[in-house]
Image (cartoon, rainbow, N blue to C red; front, side):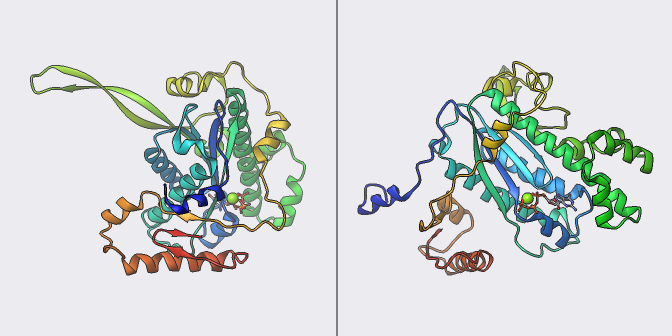
Length: 345
Ligand code: GTP
Ligand code: MG
């Protein structure tokens, strides 16, 4: 398409570069996972295997996209933080988040069977994604504080709720009992009624969520003549920690400080204006025609590795077409689809 008479179609694409010095976060979130988890009989309130599957997908994302240096996830969501100076896809929001969410989702489907050998994946899951631009390291710190507080609040609430249900309370009564309760009340309820010490008895992965950070390790290699050479090996490390938005946690991680900066003070809460900006979603004007174009990323090598017939592989095209049919089935507002090769619109 470049330098061809069709180059004008580029003008149909949105201008959505996230300008420096904004730090780019991509957050993905399971779409209607309330239904998905019921359908697939996830354990309540937390299913260790389901969480591990999410974590494996996040690891795969970190492995695939070297500009992501930190990730944090819980329940059906994950946030990925790119290094401050990233030039990935010219910092274009739509490219970056669509790539990450589509890769995450296909890994989720791919790894399902290994994680749940006894359970079939009964329908295709989907995840939503968005980009959040953080104008400074303090905004990123607020974002992490906000997400980890959400993890804590949700998990503490759900732990109480399901304990009440297990003890025989009907759902509406359990909801009524927890209405307006404070963190301290819920800890008390768990301790007094169920002999559960929230902090000691509930695994940290449920209470705190999961972080992965990219680190660089010096390794020594030996040449044929026996002389030693130092090499850098990139790896990523999983961490479970309280208060990931604290100076104590963050400033101890050299790679995070190097690529994103230091936290200068501890925050007690996230400013509501910041939360508003994290939740902001831009909308198109009413009556705007919406065309969503998807296009395989590096499909040239994908088709080589999977030995697609040249120049056209009928099975591969049928697969694209049946995916498009499934999309039309799932999203009733789509009225027309047209596809060729590795793209659809
Ligand atoms: P949208 O994100 O708005 O599409 O709705 P959602 O249904 O995905 O809800 P939300 O993202 O707010 O919350 C995630 C939901 O996923 C929880 O409310 C649970 O119902 C479900 N979920 C996530 N992890 C688990 C798990 O380990 N066990 C169980 N039983 N449910 C889970
Ligand atoms: Mg969700």
